[in-house]
Amino acid sequence: MTRLTARRALFAVPVLLVVTFGVFAVAAASPFDPVKAYAGTAALGADQETLDRLRENLGVGRPFTARWWDWLTSALGGDLGRSTVMRQPVAEVIGERLVWSALLCAVAFALAVLLGTVLGVLAARRPGSLLDRTITSLAYALEAAPVFWIALLAVWLFALNLDVLPAGGLTDTGSEQVTPGQVISHLILPAGVLGVSQLPWFTLYVRQGVGDALAEDPVRGARARGLSERTVLLGHALRSGLLPVLTLIGSRVPELITGALLVETVFSWPGIAAATVEAATSVDFPLLAALTTLATAAVLAGNLLADLLYGLIDPRVKLNEM
Image (cartoon, rainbow, N blue to C red; front, side, top):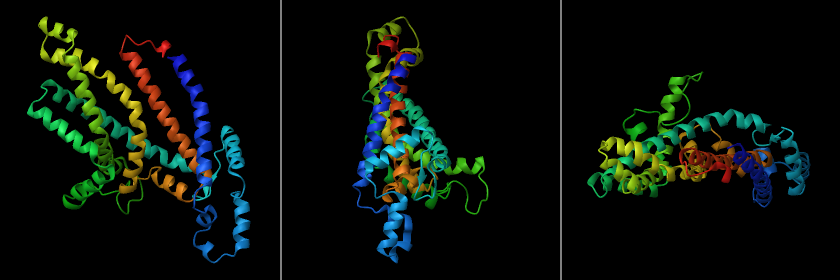
């Protein structure tokens, strides 16, 4: 396990270097003007000399390769730079928002895995039955639905029509402090929507994996020995059927992050979505590079976690050979 983690960490270094370099290159080619974004409405009445001086102070007139190298060397020393659009250190911008994005993604991911496993097992027990057709049809329908559409539908139903859940934000309107009860009530809709957007993949994978496992000889042998259907299903078929799902965990991380950005925007959740959008439209090089690096690291960590779980659960897989 240690060797696999060390190899993946070593492999991640050039990947992160290429990603951050690409961020600076793409941002430099962007049509957005970071100087006008920084100055805001004041840029409308400013003369060219003032804008040029501001451009020089911000350092955006330098080649992007020089800006990338300065940011990289500073980041290696623990300094992620200062966000020009947020007017505060990048580390503070991410630190204030990352905890809420992590909470949203963790709850949504746990919901998708648990509910997807239950529905997948129920569908796999009797292939072709009414329950199986209903679950798979619902999964395919949700798979085709955009996450922002599900979010808007949830707001319309639960917040506007039924008025049982808040439509957005982190706390109630006018509240001066963040309480666990308010956070939980405001988390239900965005986490539920994000979890539902990931649910079809886990449901279909579990259904396929458990269905194939039920047809294997070891499971048939367990039934022949007189074991109960529950023991056969949960003790033999489910464990074997969950192996393909573990490989799905790493591949779903990028879409989970993308979906979280859309969900945070719809529900005004105070995560990193707003910071990401502002960093992209304002060509905020330090903040954009840090957020992209963070997302890339999350994807690499997800792939590593999937491989580690696969090796720990499947005795046929040796981690030192991966």
